[in-house]
Image (tube, rainbow, N blue to C red):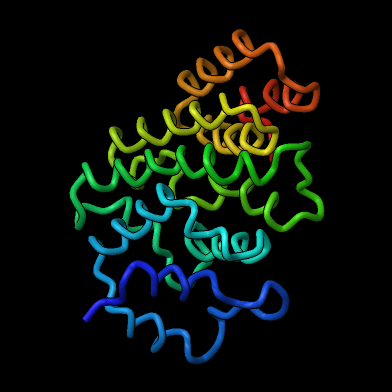
Length: 217
């Protein structure tokens, strides 16, 4: 019997926002395995989470930040998003999950961070900023199909257009890394953003100018 979507969400996010990470506890493996998650179900639950962002309203932003590191990060012991790169799940389902990330940024991140970004001390801002940095592919030849890469680039372009400094910084940070394998596409996305957006803050414009060439850390 597999865990329900609600049980999965609770397992990922219902933890103290301070203190040691719950997933480094000695009991983690047995707990995670008890959820009975297949690769197909993992993609389904990730997609639902990105689309049904109201599920996270009961948690603090610090708790959500920890959940992002766990779900997206390559250092996570579960590495749930790695299933998005493999053929075990249909391409259509995996691409739909990545497209749903645009909704997550639009419906959850942007309203939760309406002002200037703060990536020096705010855990939620830091996690969102690092989203595409810790995502398991930057478009390399051994990390997902070219069509999947195209989907990722399109989502980053959509997030870049959102009227939120944090969303824009997150997308630019990702595009900066993807410049390594998709330089022409990244430069085109950033140029289009700078050309059509008249309300770009100076620090986003400065960051975009560097990210366009893959020069940001």
